[in-house]
Length: 172
Length: 185
Image 1 (tube, rainbow over the protein chains, first blue to last red):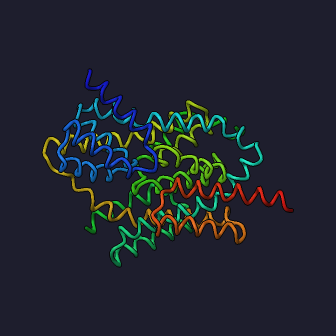
Image 2: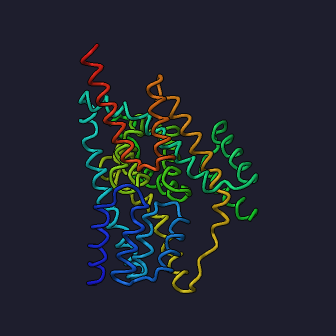
Image 3: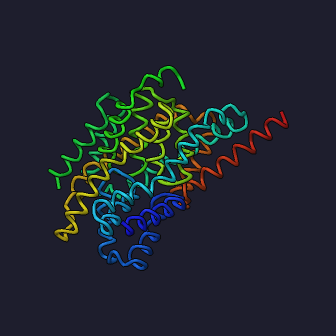
């Protein structure tokens, strides 16, 4: 019980300073889990990192893995809930005030003005993912097929992604 | 909140975001692309502008993939909607990581799932590209917008700048330019 409270407190604090995407978490969690509390070896930590990237969730699922190691299933649950509390609360607060903020002219203008930058960031994510995972003709072929399906058909993206996973399993 | 938004049931919110949580392999923008396809395009739950505003706010704290789900859920049904969307989105990954962690700590072996990702990654890239093109068509008007999109793209790829910093810069730029436009025209 005490250890679960410690876990909750650790992950809540991490959630509060979790700024700038998942990669900030790696050195932070490594320091806390491996060096400070010695719940994991470095090897286990790196394996956990690979494992959390196998899932659809954010890299922060690393919290689930490290929490699981420290306190079993319940530990994983506590870690996951508490690391996400701060950002969920913040988004709820923003959501509540969003419509009021949007009626203030200069905020609306600023928000609309930065939308092209958001689009640029979306495109950059495709580029970065491509640079790290497109290695051969096969991958480019799958990319072309996927692009065409999403662009010109109404097939649900979920079906396409799961189908591609099966194709990946069969091909590799 | 529009009338259209009022009618969405909490169960439907849960099921939709759980499905997104099951299929969104490929990291943050893969999720964003999926939510855009499903909530903006298919179901028309939220407009493209509002969704992108949520994505911009979502860069502030925590994973933006989770944040756009919370934001969209809140847009539909207030605080309960936001929490349900967030929980539904995280739940599949949580169960998956818990199971994989259990396998890992019991057998000391990493499950071989990487092969499946080799198939999904290219498709995800295709999805993100399509979403970026569609968003660009709608949101980038004129040379200034195109320039800002290109600058953000380059800053992310070549300078490896953090998204939050890039958006802060873009916000300052658009603040200044609208201020000067008002003063001098």
